[in-house]
Length: 237
Image (cartoon, rainbow, N blue to C red; front, side, top):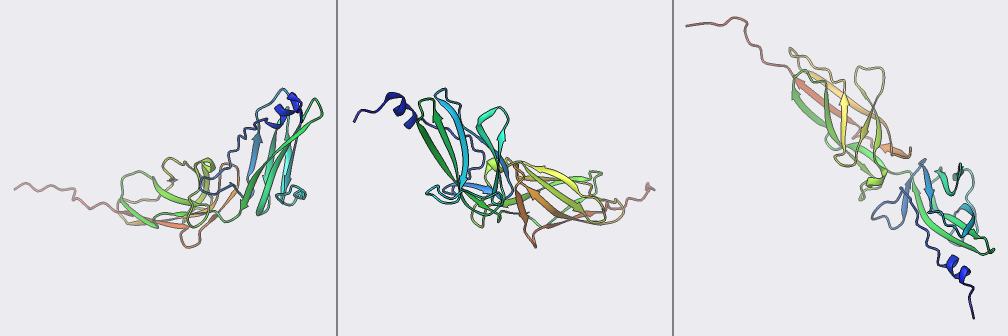
């Protein structure tokens, strides 16, 4: 059977997804709940229209509801879509490309949306001497699950925290390269030992997805030692 050349071109049309939500080692794309992500494919001159849909089954027969995800067109970019993932589960982000000759091709990507990612302090305590520096940094551990660290494409993370004694929250950015959590506002006194407790209030990934704060590992205690006293009088023998 002879196949139309243009039709063959459409059937072999390679779609390059520019997804920033993949997680290495997950076996499929993994998304943190409440993430809002823009997806797009390279524009192709043979395509007249693009249509994006999300399905809940691999047969692509049951569309996701507005309670599960929201699809928002990107102005001026029909080859792109913004998706806000609102409910746990497995989904199939699907693109239909219609050619000028009336032929249609489709491509689907499987996504697993999860609400279980966690974040915690690697160490729950640290100490230092009074040195007029009210800042320090400590490591955070963020995971998709027990065995899988949050992947690089989920960073930077936004972390909200509060220091004991303060009435307002502070915000910090954690990068993938070092995973250091920069903390400002530490109280210290050269004449007295001070104990600061830093509590993680909330955290989110780069797409705004929620990362759960791990109970029991959400408070870091920072002890600042006083300086030893030196008498103001020097004795000469």
